[in-house]
Amino acid sequence: MTATLEKYFKISQRGSSISREVRGGVVTFLTMAYIIVLNPIILSSVPDVDGNFLGGGTEAGAGFATIAAVTALVAGVLTILMGVVANFPLALATGLGLNAFVAFSVASQMTWADAMGLVVIEGLIILVLVLTGFRKAVFDAVPRQLKTAIAVGIGLFITLIGLVDAGFVRTTGIAAPPVQLGIGGSLAGWPVLVFVIGLLLMIALYSRGVPGAILIGIVATTIIAGIVQAIADVPGSGGDPTSKGWNLNVPDWPEKVFAKPDFSLLGDFNLFDGFERAGVVTAALLVFTLLLADFFDTMGTMTAIGAEADLNDEDGAPAGAQRILVVDSIAAAAGGAAGVSSNTSYIESASGVGDGARTGLASVVTGVLFLLSTLAVPLVEHIPNEAAVPALVLVGFLMMSQVKDIAWDDSEIAIPAFLTIVLMPFTYSITAGIGAGFVAWVVIKLVKGKIAAIHPLMWLIGVLFVIYFAIDPITRWVS
Image (cartoon, rainbow, N blue to C red; front, side):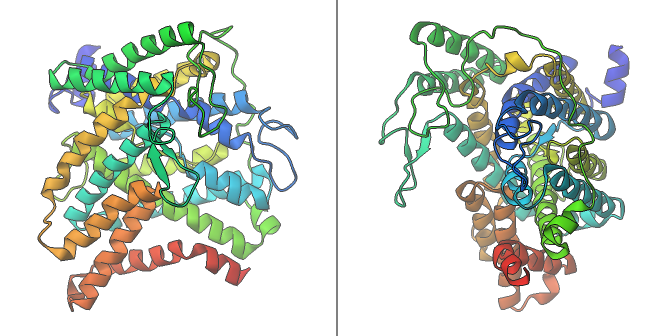
């Protein structure tokens, strides 16, 4: 068995071991398991145009358990597929941001089944673009240093995600400043203390070169969170940005650990009814918006993961890029067909890579844990976010180290790279950062008279991103 795994996944060839791959897969699961809870929170709280909630009729939140179980099921199957087909340490699950767009912008104009049909169409279009080689061609047309900037920007982005999810950084609720340290400029509450302890512990373990530093940190911090909860009885935040409670899950022991999963959402989609309900032009623009966000999010994610794992070639492309893109495209359609929104590659996979994962075996481990979690939804609901997100901050540091490979004394690449890096965290969007960098790169080449240096596909991407940034006024104009 060991020899078979070694040969198939090329574990030694990539400088890893089975134990490191298993450990990395576990770490990746722990840092992204929040999606099992967060996706149903988003999708079960918004009614569609007819006033119905996903998986729950006319009652908000009634479909929570069903959405959670299907979210875990689809993530598990697709992540295993990524590991087996692409042999790449990349996990997939319902895309945050994409699910919010589906909930608040798409379902508000049609039924949930219609909205999921548009997601399926978007995924199928991306799959065609991959199979025809177009998506890979776009990736190859992007300058290498701009790819590096994407990886660095994502590092800052996931760092901000970790800090915000922990309550270390919060919104102020006013225009200036928009964010602040904790509450009123100071840290407050037991959960933030748990996060700080977890982060310092991971930093100490990593600095000492302890194998499995991230996983050890997550497990230890989870135990600390449980002790804190037993002593202080801290409540959940309830979505209140000023709360001193746990951000997402309260770390207490559930009444039951396992429950029979409900997969009734599978296949709940209408492929073309959304065009009839919302109108052809509006529906087409919604599909285009989903398409563009999905298209470039994955490109940035796989570049960053490949760079962190040292699996990218001299042009900055990860090994097996075409297979990675095929699986990711299938995931987009599969998420819609399962009724839980588009699935995509997760940058949190970098946490597993940071802990040693280098092959698809880590993805298989992550996928199996997702499948097992379909039976343990009650338990997953009680694992605190504050115990896992310190890993995102540490991994953000690891990805930030690539910034030295950008020629900061060359404005033609430095300015686009700068915009790419800063706009990802500041807009909370990988796509926005990539788009700004691409448009700036094309404009600078154009004004300096270096038109011949602009790849035809970069022209096309630039125009598409201009449309993407102006999608709201365009939608209003054509409606």
